[in-house]
Image (cartoon, rainbow, N blue to C red):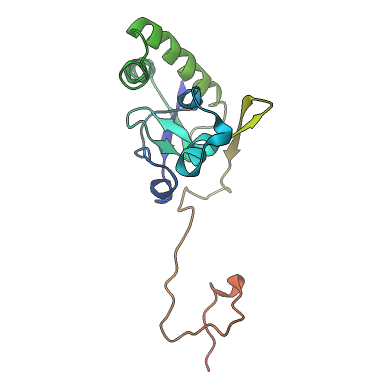
Length: 179
């Protein structure tokens, strides 16, 4: 059995979303969080969560990426129970039986996204067309022999380098030549 867990390759989720999911928590699509709002009116971080976030079930936060991981029957049952509890506590489900049924559906959908190999990364894109929400998922494939790394890297600029007004982004990663 395979399920989804949140993953953070860099700290960007903490800037992109109001609440970022903790790395390694169970994840589901989470589009149900937007059932009572008009996605066309979402702005800022809420819009970012709608357009491209997986829901971390424990934190109720968002993650840009999810990773396909091996899971046991106990993991599955615990995830369903955790999500059902969250649906009652945070979403106002009328009782645990109804919440558990909804959680089972959501987890089953997440499982359907796990047809790729273990450790594959999955991204989501949501859009609204004619009042209907559509979700598309894509697998991010690593090159052979490559491990998951940082999504972005940051460079330090040396104090004695002064841009001449013709700064080219492609030149930023190059070492300065001797003057």
